[in-house]
Image 1 (cartoon, rainbow, N blue to C red):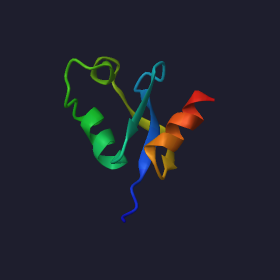
Image 2 (cartoon, one colour):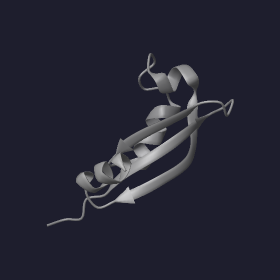
Image 3 (cartoon, rainbow, N blue to C red):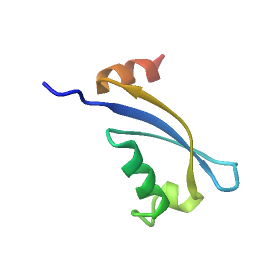
Length: 70
């Protein structure tokens, strides 16, 4: 069995007025997708939330759901 990692992350807008919170299993790739505006009509593209300001790593997706709910 291989070790799967999940991340909850927070991006800040270039104006520092907006935060975006997301969840992924590939943090670096996901941040790059935000920065290149892969989805041009998304919240992240509209508010230019590109600066990674925080992340937490989890060993499974169920654990992160429990932590976020509390």
